[in-house]
Image 1: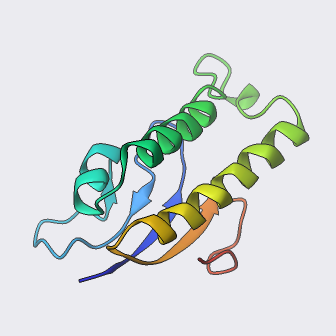
Image 2: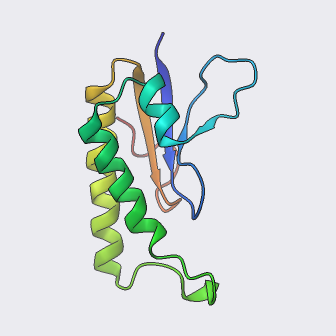
Image 3: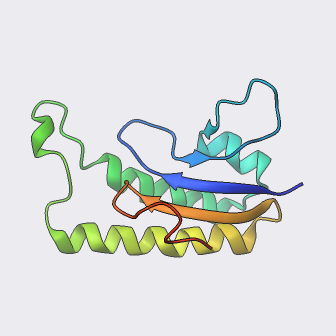
Length: 114
């Protein structure tokens, strides 16, 4: 069995979406669950967690409108790291058929697929 994965990051949300085949599947999965189901190695899990933590750090709960990356270059670099991680996820997981990378919604669906 292989699955199609979508990566879509949001503040304080799980970012790995796939159908596990379980009846009660919610489609969004936290990294611990995904690591086990998708058979991810510890290095990839650590890198995904670090990448997501960088995005989460841009959230400003006091002044929500001030949330986001400090510069366009910082956002671009984060998006590019996500592309690299998406390609790794496809390459390194025996369970992943494809990865549809959306970043934080700034990449249109099905335009960045590995």
